[in-house]
Image (cartoon, rainbow, N blue to C red; front, top):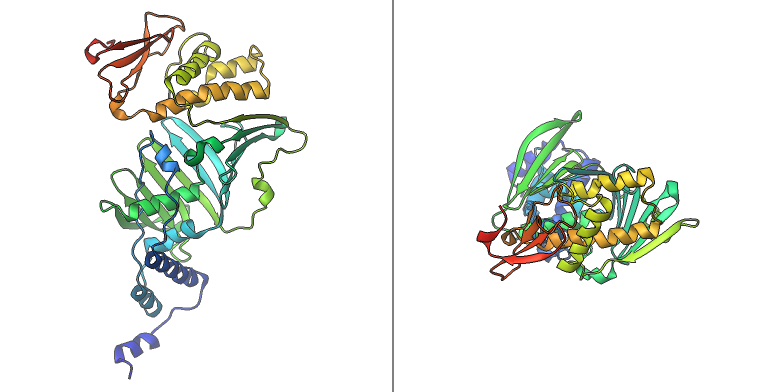
Length: 392
C-alpha cells in the first residue's frame, strides 16, 4: 500500500509535459551518469596557456545530482533549478553558435563563434582583426581569410602538439572538470535578475583563480549569458544557439579558389630570448620608425599604429607572404613573454627609447635559477647585473 503522503503528492501534481521539463530531466540524468561513470574531458590546454602558462581553474563546480533528486523533481512542481541543469548545454552540445567579447588589458575583440566538434570558426569585424579565422584542432591548421581582398593565410600548427588552442566550449568543459576536484571552489545561486527584458536565474562559481557566472532561462535552462574572469582576462558570451545544423564547409581549411595564399608553420621552440629579441627589433626598427613602442601590452601589439600608418601611406609595401613572415618573426617575442613567471620580475621601460641607443635600457628579467638579471639595452645588447644595480 502506498504511503498516504505519496498519494497526496501524485493527486496534487500540476507539472505538465514541456520542453523545459524535458531538458531539466535530461540534464540531471546526463549529469548523474557522468558522475557515476567518472567521465573526464581531455586534459585542459587553452587555460594552461593563458596568463603565463599557469593553470587557470576558472571557478565552475558542477553540483552532484543523485537519482533521488531526479525523483523529487518529478513529484514536486516547486523543483529547484540547479547549476548542473543550466551548465548542461555547454557541456553536452555538439555544435554551437554564439557571440563573444574578449577583453585583455585594454584590448577588446568581438566575434561570432561557430563550433562543430574540434573545429571552430571566428567571424570578426575587419577593424578588429581578420574577418574569418578557422581552426581545426584535429588537423592542427589555422586558416585566415580576407574575402574582400581574396587573401588567405594558412598556418601549420602540428609542431605545437599539446600547446595548440582548443575550441571555447572544450575549454569550458575542461575548466568545469578541473574545479570538480578543487576543494576550495564554491558555487552559489544569486538572486534572479531581469536581463534584456527576460527573467533569469543566476549562478556564480569561483575559486582563487577566477570566477564564472551564468544567466539562464528558468524554464528551458538554456544559458543566456556567460562571463568568465581570470586576472586581466574577461570573456563574455551571449546569444547562444545549441546543436544547430551547421554546414561543414564553413569549417574547411582548404584554400578557396582564386585566393592569393601565404603559409607558414608555428614552432614550439620559438620562445627563446634570441628569437624574442629579433621580434622586438622588427617591432621597434621597422614598424615604429626606429624607436621602441610606448608599451608592450596586448592592445599595443594589436594596434601597432606605426605599422598602420606606413601601410596607409604606402611607405611599407608587402605581399601577403611577406606580411605573414614578418608577423611570424614578431610573434616569438609575445611567446617569450608568456613563458616568464612572476618571480622573474619582467620590467619594460623602453617607451620612446631610440632604437640603437646602447646607453638606455629597455627591459630586464631574471632567468630561472640565476642570481643576476639580464638587462637589454636600446641596441639589444645585454648586460648581467645584480638586483641592486638595476637601472632606476
